[in-house]
Image (tube, rainbow, N blue to C red):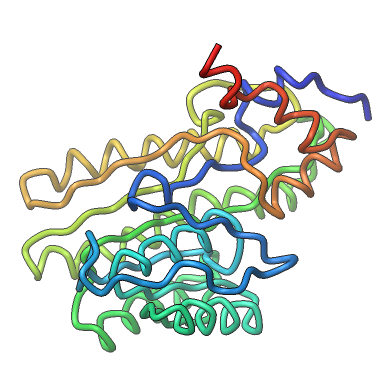
Length: 265
């Protein structure tokens, strides 16, 4: 495997997603589930999302975890899922220890019954869903289309694209009944352009962008706002796995990002 250039890594946005937490909350929350942080920011019960019920898929690590923490800091009630039960319970407990409100429910977004039970579980416990962040996703190992296995293709597509479809399928009916809501889907820069050797990832993120546009058109008159974000690379466990596959590292990639010195120049 040849090492890709730093600029290619950053322009593709193919490796991971940037922090949704910075877009939706005043304060950011850094997530590093390999070395979980002790609670550092005490939740504000009167924060900007006080009393709002926020549902998040894939929040046991990375962007999803950071988002869950950031919403909780701003007073939201967070209900999140992931496949790793021990890690999910650990994240929920950490948020609670910081004074936040969070519950974890195991769910695999590739499985329809799991997604249905997860969404239903949120409404059963909290009565509504004000905001849904459909974030769960996985990276694609680098390979050409001719050498790509169908199993690998289906795993990425089902997790990333079908997972978003199933999430909206079960979130939207509740939002219709309650008179509205907000949905944000986690896409990628790679959902707007194509790049070599990451066909499953790029195609899945293109699908998320398209699903978002369709859902926005279908439900705009029902007070349901549907948007997608298209982030680039951020230091998460998923990014680190992808960087290893590309024979590079985060420190090398991060040199291309503007920093305070660049801003002050």
